Image (cartoon, rainbow, N blue to C red; front, side):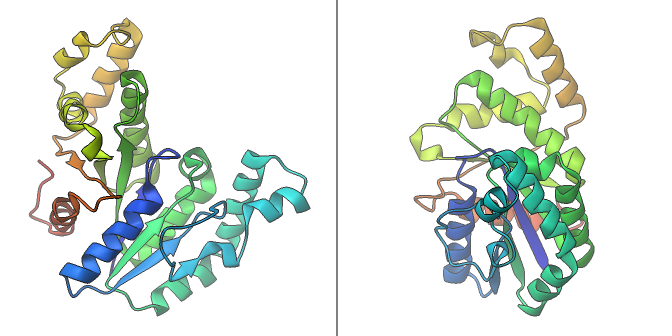
Length: 248
């Protein structure tokens, strides 16, 4: 059994990628997939989850019942998920899937930077071989994109799982950003000098630090909406599961 945890900022297309990858794997492989929604704040999902954490807790209900704001309600919801984790994992395993595609909250900070999120990943990883995707999209200013790269590395360190960087909405012209992402994690910062607004010494030093803690990696470009690049992503995931595979 293998699991893929998809994390990333709100609006990057996490749920769309879960749905698209599930469809692609069903169409082109014999792998049995299970779609797991771990976002108690989700409104509408573009896929039918095989397990939906909203059957246990909804952030909207927590906000009303405990008189919390949106962020507080999400944090409290994840605490409730942690409390029910034994039952959740038992049910997930009972699905007997080969591959578990795990959706996470749009409020990434409530998952990555809070104890319940880390514990959830640790527990899932102890039962299922787990890797992650850090999803960003190309509809961002260069400064926002670089911040996303930094957040991806922090998420990898916090959650202690192997993370594949994926750039979504590549059909909108994100090939240059995909190459830039690879340059940054490989320590090549020259391309940044061409972009106004990222020349500050503090930002450059921070990026240099990130590159020191990053192994050479291929950034996968996909369009979840148009189901493009999913074969490349699936191949890269297979490399992660293979002890002899590398990420370059």
